[in-house]
Length: 611
Image 1 (spheres, rainbow, N blue to C red):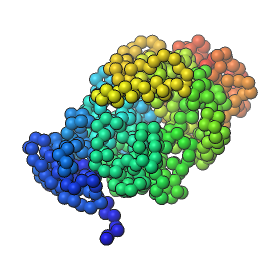
Image 2: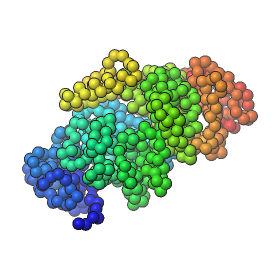
Image 3: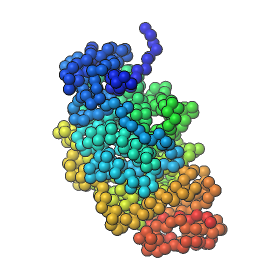
């Protein structure tokens, strides 16, 4: 037997230069496989290729044709690598020729990571229409705000029109209610024309429950491991080669055919793989090969609940090679510093002290004991530059996973909101905003789904209730299946014309401008950082001394004003002070300051540059 494993092409249907459909499906359990073309009624048998693959080149399938696979048992199933489910997760797949789109972004260059200022968006609630086309009309607004990258929450096809996206079941597809694959290509092209990169949130740790046909095709799952969502995806058990190939090819497709600039990989700690070459490491190597071939530089970013630098170490240092990671701990420390409740997993974090440690060390727990976990946790992140870490004061998880989905605007004062924004922007890490925070959006962002299976819908309701038990909350969460939960999570764009929302927008815009223009901020450099917490004070003095510039930020989390002596005997020029009347504050700090004391307001952010 030939032991050389021949790597096949891209799963699903693609079209070659001759207009032929190249069909590939992995179905190792099947004795025969046919493609059933809905429009013509024709059933075309596929050839057995080995290692469980079936394929054929044919002119019998055209772009726009609906089709299903017949695995020999007269049960017709959609394509696991479907590009478009125009009739939802239970309908047929639709053949799409991704080469048809006329790209105009040939001059586009993905910004270097230190230049990323990320804006996280849920497409369905960003606009009244909830589509990519509607969002495209808001790109001038986002360009004016100053963000350099849009992060889209998952777009893979899910059941019904409402979902956060983490219940997607067709990773190659674009949700029909968002506009489908052509709308995605058009959107990315438009973003690039405005100078904005696009990050796509992808879920490679599980597949959603409704419409999930993968187990009927082959060994996509393994019972070797458990995840919060059930059986793990099979990345290292028998038959895992094809499963790894499926997900790696998916990542390559987004970069190659949709010109996506970065993928944010969801909860990679739930990817179970003990192979000698971890699937993320292999993915990184294949992405680097694509980058070399195309001249484009895409990034792989990860969310993980592990303070483990192995994920962001280069491949040649036995790491997985991921380009950046989210740091939830910065958020947790910032949240408790703002006076919010220390319950659940927030109980591990001390106000101000934990935040100061995150500024210095990225990870709060870097080999130290975690009372919440009842064990030591994490490793040190020394030597990794700031642009390898992404921080935020709020995101979809930490809003929507509250029982009532309250945004920060409903939990802290207006002044504290400005302080939180300044804290994120002055950090040596990459800043991320969640849609609407820049105008202090007051609508919640709640958890919502539109499962059509009544038992599944009820299971989601019960699961939400169990989740909040750890926080000892009373009452009931909003019905995640109810349309009203989705509707009340939509942004209120009219707030931009009202106060104090209009001023908050101007404040964020100015912060972003400073982040871009001030060398010490835009460098995302941790090496020139000094963090001081005056004894007995709820206050941090942060120095950024890099790129030939010295900045000092005063972060006062106390409910009273404080007198602060700026470090170094020299002259200072004010860059921004959240307490200034310009930003609806109650005082205006001096534009210029000699060495000496500065009286900062309660709950305020103040930034001066050495002149």
